[in-house]
Amino acid sequence: MRRQTHQRIAAQVMVFFAEYRLSFQEITACAQGYFEQAEWSELQALAAERIDLYGEMVAETAAALEQQLGDVVYQPALWHQAKAYYSKLIRQRTDPELAETFYNSVYCYLFQHHLIDNENIFIRSTRAGKEIRSGDETFRSYSLKDSGLVQLLSRMLDDFSFAIPWENKRRDIRNLVNYIRNKYPQSLFREEDTRVDVIESVFYRNKAAYLVGRVHLASGSQPFVLPILNNEQGGVYIDTALSDESDVSVVFSFTRSYFLVDVDVPSEFIRFLHTLIPQKSLAELYSSIGFYKQGKAEFYRDFIDHMESAKDQFIAAPGVKGMVMTVFTLPSYPVVFKVIKDRFSSSKNVTREVVKEKYQLVKKHDRVGRMADTQEFTNFSFPRERFSEELITELLAVAGSSVYLSEHEVVIRHLWIERYMTPLNIHIEQVLESNDKEALFHAINEYGKAIKQLAAANIFAGDMLFKNFGITRHGRVVFYDYDEILYLTECNFRKIPEPLYPEQEMAGEPWYSVAANDVFPEEFSMLTSCDPQIRTLFNELHADLLGVEFWQAMQQTVLRGVVVDVFPYRKIHRFLR
Image (cartoon, rainbow, N blue to C red; front, side, top):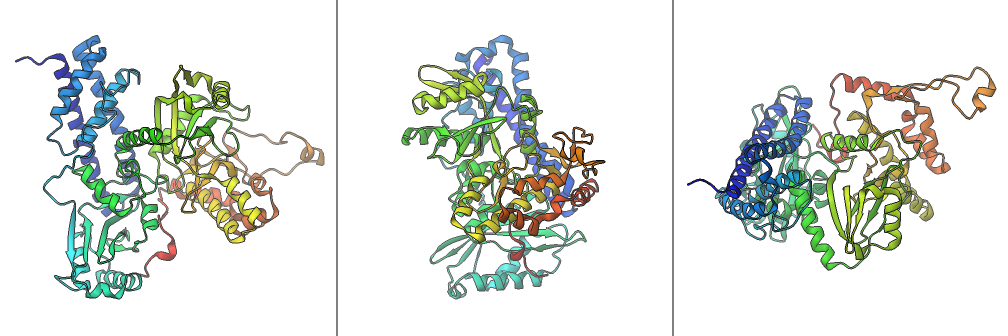
């Protein structure tokens, strides 16, 4: 029997989704080989390729539907029927929530993010609250009842071995035993019920592999992460152990690239991760393992629920107003909404399209824990009653082309959503007022380290004013203003030429030629001239940033293809080798 049109739509979306998932898994499966071969640039390229894959497959699906069905595909009523049929097709899949989101993406691509409602797409998932299990465990379990601690650790390392050997397995086990004895109560060694669960799949990112799991004690469970490094001489070793929830959370931070990890049943996988770091939202966890579109869908659902329960009003985000973006926030919800302004400050030599390209660059680039991930939305609708007339007036004044108003809605045609962080300039002002010298030291040191680690990842931040950085709840300084970022290798770092006569030095304009990508590190001293304490600290900690030598040396490092170590944990935590 010939399929009806709505069935053909659903079946075609299903075929392309299955192809997407297969390609996603094939790309992910390459990570282990690159890790074992210490092919770091290839591993990073793999992560970027996987991000591109989603958009490419959505576009292919839409093109195939247009070719097969013509203009009929643009009839919204058909999609209401297609959704119902598609729901039946995905029932037997182990990844139905991803399938729903893919369907949503195809619909939004075809209808250009208009006519969005739960009749035609899965604004609300049909799988919410339904547990899906593959029949296989997500994790392996090890019990002290079956063996002593040393044997347990030895068996665990054997089970998660690589194609290259452990550099020194006995030493790694000894380091882990010493860590456990210092970290856990001694009663651990006498409790037969003590169990260790380790996720079956190894997590890969940049230059490390990670074993992720939890320890079950009589007092409850505790998460752990074991980072594994390649010595680049044919062996691997455990670099450290992390078991504080805050340390584990940092490994899964929104400021880091997505993991490459094999996931068969995403919802089951996420449930396990959520037991380890419950303060992380489902959106953050899905994004952290590469399902960033699912993360976007989970964020939107959570935001809708929050809007129904919270009563506060949207406000302009605290901090200095941006020259390219206008930013607002809901005080009860930890994100900011960033909208491109219609007109930029005369000092900003960028266009709307360039700004979009910069944000996409950050999405795909290694963020080394120093750049915030973002979610991009089109035609995002807010209830008008939650906006003051003052905020609406400001949005219309600076970004009117991106704002549509109706009686009950404020629709932003294009925006980015980013985790809220305290702007660094505000944090520093508060620290100076409280005369907290330790906090000031930490903030300035983090600021300089952020700039250096971005440089190591081939990113020059451009506008490095304090207002363009934020500080996270873990005390890390993160860059979040992307309109002027460049690849470090595109910059020309120069010393300021000596003036030929005094009048040149006193002139309002430079007495020397300045090309588009010329950078003069000496000028960075102006960034810390606001306060003598700040200037003194910065010069003690990071004076090398004020000379061309640091920047040119880092350029050469990047050009040689060296991927610099940037760990998601403090170096002091690393085990001795």
